[in-house]
Image (cartoon, rainbow, N blue to C red; front, side):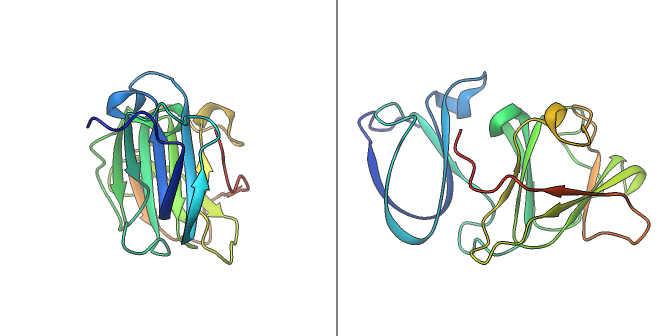
Length: 173
């Protein structure tokens, strides 16, 4: 997608990621994440005048609906896989390095297909404006998530599954 490279100010709703390079920065390059639930004007801080691609996060029509999006490279770049429901066999297995959770529900990630194997429940921090939760780099999250290890995801957390709280709201990268 070719875009006007002079964008510095934008009126927007919901959640968007703006990338400096085409195809969502297939390598690591500057990007900027903006969350504006109420349709105001925002000024870019990082990629102003250099936007070549963009994509929404979660469900475009309603940012409050729970979803999880897995990205091929850190900082939400490269190819991605999105779901708003349980996914027993992810296509991106072996190729994930970051993720974003929308809505207020927890998600359990598994290292085996069909909700088996080692599991970790990711618990988003509460936000009265439904701000998303971010893990920009699996290797720096506590506890670390092995790169490419998520084979299936399920909404919610079972009682016996280990929990990890995500506390990095309002990310600007």
